[in-house]
Length: 194
Image (cartoon, rainbow, N blue to C red; front, side, top):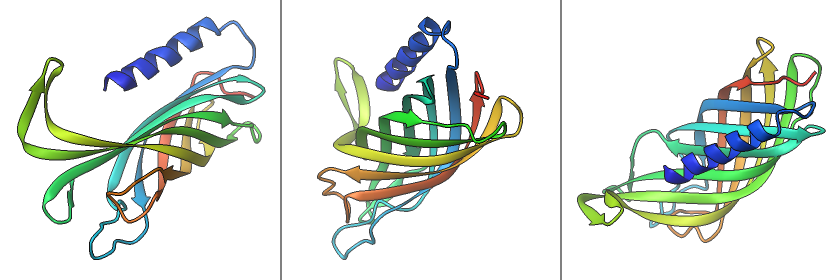
């Protein structure tokens, strides 16, 4: 959570410092999605399945180009091999290209890097000087490719169907190194480019 707060603070400062320039756009999104992955094998499960909650933000600052951040996590715990509770998290920082397609639509393409963090929950708490947790994390580097289409229902609010492909490095806990997330987000644009 500290990392997410730091990223959010960074983007807010970046947005406020650059607010004097023309044709800038800052967007916040919240959504729900599903995740698919390679089928499970007799010994290794799939990462696919379940509902994922998520949020994102982006800042477009030069000719529809900008930077973005996305985070999504499984809404409920799943069981790893039938007994170990776990929950995957995906987060990434992206380059974003979002050209307008008229007054009520805007395409969105993104590519970036990030991490998959799998939390395996334990029945006991482990404590250190930073606090106590009841999980152990397994973290993996990932590359992300995404696409979406924003449909503006008002000049500021939009609905965005979206798809994200995650290519996860060394994802040995699951049956493959690929995961695909499909979903829909609701968003607010602080400046809709026209």
